[in-house]
Length: 156
Image (cartoon, rainbow, N blue to C red; front, side, top):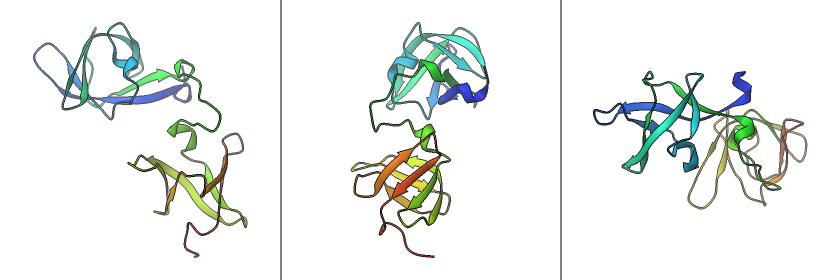
């Protein structure tokens, strides 16, 4: 399975306890990946989750073998639930080029930052654009572009 066919859902963090359990760093908000019986990929190898608990609101899991700290925890892309219309996974937006209505390129999406009131697109230039209807006009993942309304960025 290629790396493009997988989605990162966390990383192996520090050990927790003496039974081989570890904290999942940067864990997906979807708890089903870490439920006992789930099968996930760690370092490209399929493993089974044997137990799950929490420590400081982070999942702590035990799996059926030992793994290296920092290893990526992934799932196959096809295992993700489908999104509704106008819903996107963060990884689908990263790398898309953002344009204002006048055609000016504002740069590429580096990350999606999750906030209390709304999420924001973090561009490589340092610009943050709110993911709200007044700002984002269209998102075309297939074309690799996002169209935004004017007034949310400062001119060069």
